[in-house]
Image (cartoon, rainbow, N blue to C red; front, side):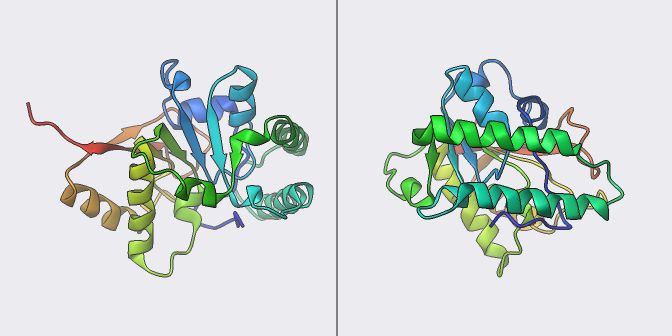
Length: 219
């Protein structure tokens, strides 16, 4: 679950990171947000403390998962990765602090942490205003190219707008999933924007993909 990949290195993102990664405005923060497979980060905890609506869907929320053990394993994998990486590592103290905040929020607001199956019960299209998808989307080794396209189609059903970050790997090369995704979006006549963002933590550069789930209106 949430395995690290050489495509997009694992990270523990903060609220400020999310703001710059996804170009979030004050208005965006008031929307009904889906944070999809984020692993451990501080965004949801900060949002919940400010009484904002963020639903987190992640394998860690599945019934029977030992959350404390899962987070420890994730931290261990991160430490091992950064020991061999040429990219600046996350400070160990910051990682431990992030874990503490994450676990506390998970315990305090369990209603905001959904298993994957909960999404399948949503019949209403665009139930969420905004879906945010970080490293996981491109770090998975999809068995077939259309799997990534299928996932994006699902996200566009669940949310009015989807934002994906990053769009490149640790070397700065565009991820191979991008081509099929963009072609599919064009064929479906969806609104698409590739936008440079201010986040500097990703060694491959800072750009995100925005997708509007409703067809573009020609004026």
